[in-house]
Amino acid sequence: WQIVCDLPNNQTYRIDARIKSGLYKNAWIEIKGFFHKDAKRKFRKFSQIHKNVQLWDRTVLERLGILVNGKPNPIYGSP
Image (cartoon, rainbow, N blue to C red):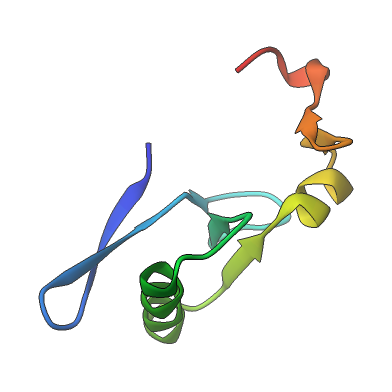
């Protein structure tokens, strides 16, 4: 379900989502709780190449109502 994107030096980065309409139209979304060193470096490279890259963590997901107290919001159904 992730989107594979090319980076320089024959590398790739897998980003979680791209929103095509609504409030976050054309945003690239990375959802993270923790970054490993290599993933953080690739995220920075990806962010330099693409515009409107957003990093969503638990705080953002709860603000948006996607999570409630760190758990999936039941109004969206079970995972």
